[in-house]
Image 1 (cartoon, helix red, strand yellow):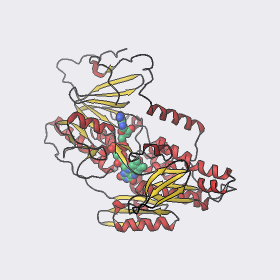
Image 2: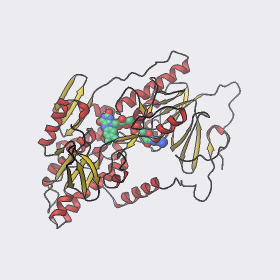
Image 3: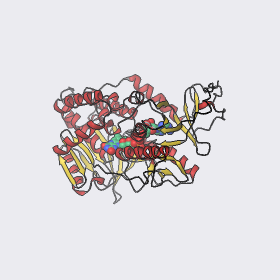
Image 4: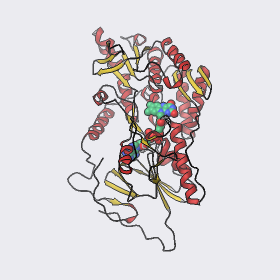
Length: 477
Ligand SMILES: Cc1cc2nc3c(=O)[nH]c(=O)nc-3n(C[C@H](O)[C@H](O)[C@H](O)COP(=O)(O)OP(=O)(O)OC[C@H]3O[C@@H](n4cnc5c(N)ncnc54)[C@H](O)[C@@H]3O)c2cc1C
């Protein structure tokens, strides 16, 4: 079935400029919002229906926040922006010549034409060529990842409580976090909070305060990007709360039993642990490589496409790449780079539509970086000011509240923080067997050849927006 062509616009009426935005993360959402008053129609295509606030995923994994608080529906956020529409779909192809984007979802592929394109598909987890580690040490990039980790973390305590074998019990009560960047540090700190405070009185046969939390990294420092002072401060705070910090330890083996690591001197060690969390390494969305191949651009070691100073793809001034997918001037993969990049792309499109001079090269304004370690304790670096402890934690609290989308979400988040940080409980501990089944089904789908609902046993029609001609079904990337 082919979608009927929309009514042909009157001959005198010029066609509105069409902007397609790929991704509903920081880059995609802020770019779309910045086009609110522009004379164009914006179509945001994303493989999820939410705007995910990734920096707080660890709080979903450790039962502080619900997934709804950090992942509001994009459709709801944009409901008042009349020139924006949201489409669910995984983009599998970008045709730079025909200026179309192909996305996949039930009931089949959809081809969407564009005049300007903003690609903000972010990055996924990288296991540095050891993808088999993923089964035993989930990463933390999506809500599914966080819920999976929630199941594993709380599940480990449950299994320890059941176990009668002291060696096995110790394995269940050992948590290994791989990667001592902000995510790893925050996870390690929160698991200690669980063991020492939140779960302390919940079990009868195990003493959760005896649990081991190991933070392991091949690099020689914790939070290396924060500089030597804050790095040492962070390490001191972590060790002070009981985290075992193993630096210069490269993971060379990982299975259900535990983690094998190797030091620079070639000495191997093994940590028996049931629950492992991968917080190291990112790889850009495969769309970066696809765009690079089609445009002749290069990609860096993390798979990010090397963009022009104005964030466009070489030879294609109508295509912008922003956020974690783009490589420019060694900018870090952080939310502010994506937000400001998205806004910059939107500003360039607005200027072109108005016939005004373009803003030119993208200039990043570093607003600082911060990471929490435990309740009431964080490290923060804002320009030349470096601080660790309570003040940094207050700063972290304020900044995160500002960037959580929506007043109601801010309010409930604040309440949940009060419950967890002032009190001793975690209100979001639910994990259900059905969630596990559902997740496994999705995971199986991900690895299988792309078979989409509606595509089984028949060739689905390719729908072309704007009533264009039917195109052959593209090969899924
Ligand atoms: C656990 C964690 C903690 C972090 N903590 C911090 C922090 O404290 N401070 C900080 O500044 N940064 C932090 N970051 C980094 C920050 O979240 C990212 O830099 C930022 O999200 C990048 O924005 P983006 O728009 O490029 O990508 P994302 O926000 O990842 O958005 C990508 C979007 O593209 C969609 N998408 C992907 N592929 C496709 C496709 N093929 N078709 C359609 N849609 C697609 C996704 O569904 C998503 O909506 C953290 C990241 C993680 C994972």
